[in-house]
Length: 318
Ligand code: 5GP
Ligand code: MN
Image (cartoon, protein in one colour):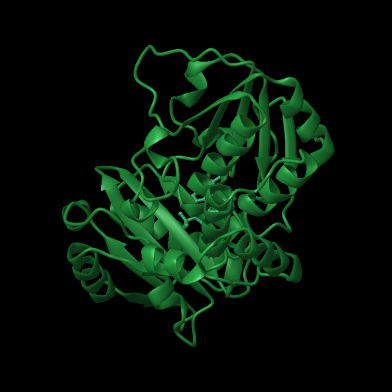
């Protein structure tokens, strides 16, 4: 059932024990929004705990209260009266759903979120990040925005907008960022922390760039990384941005084999709606940034993906 942000605030006010979660393969918005909401709810005297069923890239480990995030273990349950799902629809939660039968409140900014398998959904596709919505929620709840909360929220907004460069950066996005800086955020500190990469990651980027393939008269650029290459580095964060910038390119993709027959797809676009392509392949996302997982071989995944992108572009198979 679709609800307003006011309704979402009312549900949170009525709850006492809240289990907060976000998507697997968590990014700055997933971790920032869950940690900020945990602090906001605790500030209102509630019990709130974040569970994420995945590992988290190192750049996010220094966020306030990061060490309190828990990963569900097999057979575990958590006593909650509300499950709060942030920054994703319900299908990307790993085993978190097994922790509780509490009603699910979902707050998200993904256009592809249909509210399946949740009780209440507040979705705002014009929010650049879920952290932007959480900021408005905090205002709705009359919660104090501490410097720690502001740091978490700013990180999510900055990372989901490519540091205020992508098309989702709007006047209200910058207005909220400004409020967060007033609340105590140090933007350059967060930027430096987020752009930091290990030597292995930079070497991985070199390998990824070596795998660059162009399709459909250079309108599409792809990087394809097999499992052996993927094992050498722990993150592909930002790789796709290096090829998205090619002047002829409309759609860029990164196809990476995470395990045999498990291929992750990331897509970025300058025009075509890649959320539709991702949805048609079982994933989702935003108009200009989307992803999915293809459970097949790398070669087959490339064929399926390039075929779907070609159809969306209105061009034949390459
Ligand atoms: P990324 O390429 O950065 O992993 O993801 C781009 C956007 O698409 C993000 O907003 C992410 O949440 C969304 N996305 C990526 N993969 C999936 C997926 O498998 N399912 C859904 N529903 N969304 C995805
Ligand atoms: Mn997000």
